[in-house]
Image 1 (cartoon, rainbow, N blue to C red):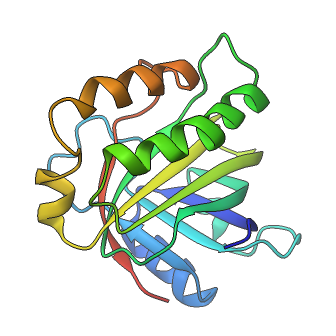
Image 2: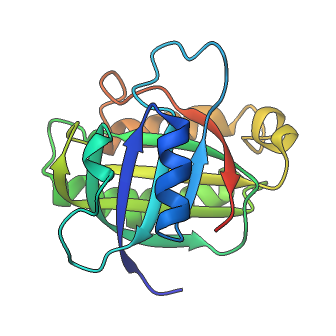
Length: 184
């Protein structure tokens, strides 16, 4: 699938995310765990970027971004492990994004064999909100696959963790969301 230009918004208000998704015929997901810990947001809305000003309602979100959506593995997802990414401070945004796309993407497919879909949302422009460099959407068909079969096996964990440190600031990048996907 070709890369597409999209608009992403993040919020802590699931009702707002639902409303925005319905109003814009957009894909969205939310993490409704009671213990949210250090989650910076718990809902994400994705819609086609029409190059227009923000539609009403989006200004109430915590952040808004113009992104390039790269589908690394085609498919569908019912549950998503959503990883906000802040680049490794030794790299430029372009360098981090290139590693994430060209090195990490293929590596992830090997070490996360139960992924039903994998999408990288590379931030092109921060309209407002936290300075994220991207959002990884690691999709799974079942919540059990996400929670119990995230990696191919124990040997995959250090391989992925070491590679992530090459392009991402693992101390500053927020904790992942475990989100339920909503259809358009």
